[in-house]
Amino acid sequence: MLPSSEKVLRNLVDALSGFFDNSTLVTDFGRGLNDLYFPKEYAAEIRGCATAMGLDYGWLTLVNLGYEISDACTSIIAQTPEGNILHARNMDFWDGIWLTDHLKNLTMTIDYQKGGKTQYYATTFAGYVGVLSGMKPNGFSISIDTRFYSQGISQFFYEIIAAITEKNATLVSFLSRDVLARETNFESAIENLSNDLLIADVYYIVGGVSADQGAVISRNRTGASDVWRLDDPSRWYEVQTNYDHWKQPPWFDDRVKPANNGMNNIGPSNITMDGMFHVLSIKPVLNLQSTFSMLACPATGYYESLMRNCPYPCSE
View 1 (cartoon, helix red, strand yellow):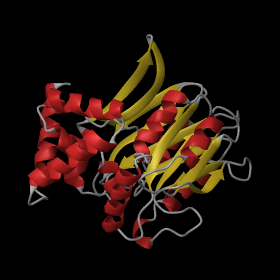
View 2 (view 1 turned 30 degrees about the vertical axis):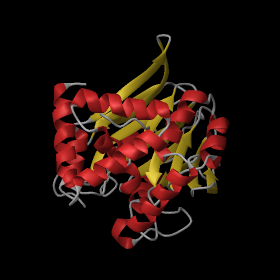
View 3 (view 1 turned 180 degrees about the horizontal axis):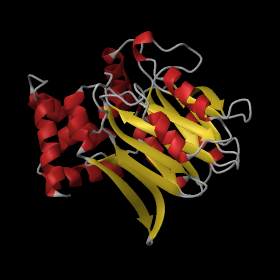
View 4 (view 1 turned 90 degrees about the vertical axis):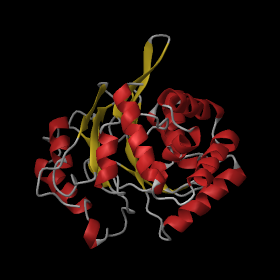
């Protein structure tokens, strides 16, 4: 791990520690999750990263729960006239600008290889072992958007307890990495992401390699509430933020309307990856909490991530 990443992550952990009166208790909770609940491979990766960075692995385990706690993202899938599926997303975190600034300096793209050959790509943060944005070349792409809890943070802690006791539930980002590692095509990815038991509600946005292979999976802990598929030409793109697509987003956080307007202005006959990036750059789709953008096309193998800064004046 690069020294700069070690320093940034240590500063982040120190900052997070200030939110708790009993940091030892919180650290012990994280160790317990790692030792008793996390899959052995991922638990070992977290412990290894913690050792390299000089951090307590209990704290780093809790950092790996960060996505389940709070974020706000925008994902878009679209179909080109040639039938290729384009996938774009902004990764946002709602815990404040201070966290966003830390995470920007921890962002990296990883090339997961086996036998010297790329298996899949992922954009993640130093010390974070799950996958929030990734692509399997000539297979499929995945991004994750949080599905906000109606009962807030208290419901989140219930989910953590449920995961510990049920043991066969998984973190949303662990499942996406598992699927990228073991599945080979869009439909098998949809099947697994729709049905495996999770600790939290979430949206999985998935793109494939052929026409109409794009979908938003609205997940609860036990299964899919809805699978919203592309259906060109009537529905050549889909925009997903953090609210069910069949409901109106709240007025104070409506990123869907400006994203829809941007996509409609481009049109199905002119959509390109540059056009997708342009839509990701429309405020408030791009906002103060935007950390990075991911752009992917599984059919061509194109995958790119870029750190984002929202020029002043920007929206919260």
